[in-house]
Every structure is written in C-alpha cells, then in structure tokens.
Image (cartoon, rainbow over all chains, first blue to last red):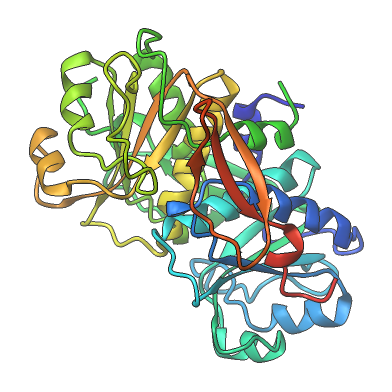
Length: 193
Length: 193
C-alpha cells in the first residue's frame, strides 16, 4: 500500500460521493474490526457500532446530519452524491469510557482504512441524536457519539497553509474545489525547536 | 509498507522499550506533521504539541505518568526500558474544540506513524497535569490532554478475544508477555448482521 504519510494526506473530509458506488456490509465490518483492536483508555472498550449501507436507512440517517457548517449556502449533497454507507459510533453507558479520546481513535482508524480502499468520508459531531437514536432503535444505555459517512469521493479537497491569525473556515472555489486551511507545523509546536 | 490492517494490528500499547534506541526531534516532528493535517472538528485546530527526546526532560515527564493501572505490582518501566521520547497533546483554550474526538484522532495518527517505523508507544490520560504543566512551562491558556510515550518496543503484546461478561483487564504472564482482552466483533456491532 501507499506510505502512511500518503494515506494520511489522502484522508480528507469528503462530503460529495459517487452514490452509485456501493459499500458492502462486509467492507464496513472490516473497518469496524480495525477499530475493535485499537487502544482504548484503560481498555474499557465502551464503543459500539451501527453500520448502514442500505438505501432506505441511509436516507434516514442522512436527515439527522448537519452538513458543512461553514458552507452556509449549501445544504449537503444532492441525491446521487450522498454517502453510500454510514458507521455510527455509540457508547455503551454501562461501561465508563476512561477518556474521550476513544471515539477519535476509532473514527480515524475507520477513515484511514476506508482511504486505503479509495473510499473517503466525513465525521459528524453535529447530529440530531434523539432522532437518530429512534431510527436505529437504540436502547437507553446507548449514546450516539459520532457518525462517519462513507463513499467514493466525488470532490477534490486541497490543504492550504495559513498564518496564526488567518481564518480557519474551509471554503469552495468557483470550480467546486474544497479548500481546507491548516496551521503550519511551527505554529502548533510549543516546545523549542 | 505493510497493509493498513497489519499496521493497526502492530500498533499495540507498549510500555517497555529499548531506551538506548533514541528517536530524533526530526522524527517526532514528522509524526506531529501527520497529526497536523488530520480532520479536526469544524476545523478548529485547537491542538498543540510539545515534543521531548532529551534524557533529562524525558525523566521529568516520566515522573508525571501513571503506568498500567491494571498491573498493580508494577510501577512502570525500569531505567533502560523507559520511553525514548514523548509527544504531549495540549489544547490551546483560546480555541474551542468542536469535539473531544480531535485528541484521539491525533494520538492514533501519531502512533500509527510510529508503528510504520518499527516504533511503538502508549497513550496516557492519567497524568499529573499540574506538575507536567510546570515542567513544560506552559502558559495558562494551555491544557494538557494526553501524553504519548514512544520508543522501540521491548515487549510482546498479544490480543485475546473475550466473551461479553469477561474481565477486560490486561495482564502479564510468567514470560512477561502482555495479554490484552478485546471484545469480539459480533459483540460490538449493534446493527442486525
């Protein structure tokens, strides 16, 4: 496979997809199996997963997500460009999570696994959790943490380096290329280097 | 490089190292540069990093970490088996983090990058934060989130699959092999499969 550096670079947040490119349940389970063996704070393993790759359920999940907060004139992908699958990250509250880092560890692992296969996606924290919990028929002890939308990306995302005082809002140019401002390495290192 | 699956499998939590195998500042900066371009909730990029690979500072950081909560008769690695480097994940509180997942995303990315090079490590949430903040001379707006210890692993870690009711505590056998119980895939999937 590609170097880890190239994998990390290729793993952008994608929000438009070739919806006709389906993702199988088997593939989704492969990604969750990666997350399963990641480090977990004090090994509590409180995370649970709900996977979806069927058209009707996908449509229901789609309606619970808030898309791209900074693109105020865009309401999310049109039909045909929507995610082909979802992985919902859930905490079983019967098990205490030692750190809140667990969900991020799992999410990044799933997305890097998807990237290796030429897929991509976007992690949502802004979710209508009550509505989604009803759709997925989750028992009371389950709390929705994050939703990962997945598909074959149908957009180009580029990173632009910014100065400390610059705006961090992402934006799309006239060619629909998505630009993501990222701070420079020297601006995020606090140790003397 | 190896497949992503093999990379994730090789990325265990290691707590004993060949301390004489040093890790350069340049290598640590490479790992932070991977974390720099990872997805960040609403792209806030509130994470900052302090890197350490020098003996005296390493020793000071070591003293602020609580090692392996479940190994009650083990106080952490002896001299010569301690980490060769650290990456401290810090939040700049002048920037709101959109989700607590950011630190986990960064930590997992750094550890997978280290794994690619035959290194390994362990992420700490149980830290004497006040003490470490003084050691690193961090300003008031900086909050320590996680510490990642890194080195060339000097121990064998194996995963064992468990039933839902089994104990999740990791343990070491008489040959000092570290066993980590992980739930089975079917036990962490909530969707009908």
